[in-house]
Image (cartoon, rainbow, N blue to C red):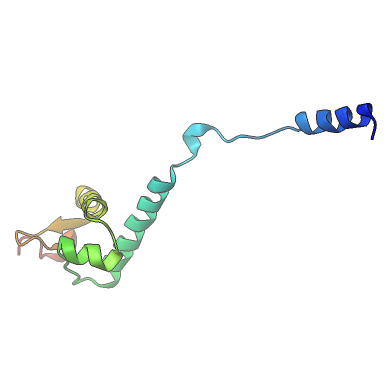
Amino acid sequence: MNKHTNSRAHAAVATMPVTVAPQESVAAPAEVWHDDLVRRVRCEYLEMPGLALTLGQAQRMWNLHRGECERLLGDLVDAGFLACTPLGMFVRADSGRAGA
């Protein structure tokens, strides 16, 4: 190949348009994972209305580290979906068992 052919091919590659999504619209993978897990746990509690789990049981059920599980359950309590009983059981807030 001659020198001109190589430079033209290189120039064509270098000038190809690239579209980049704005940074603020791209969610971090950990946040997407957390949001998916919140939806999954909500579904579990909706499918099993009497579900009552301790932190340790929830960790084992969803295979989570303690900190991840505390954040997950805390977010659901803050959202008013779950409540924590005096015995440390996480139940649906609308189950009538929150004070038990």
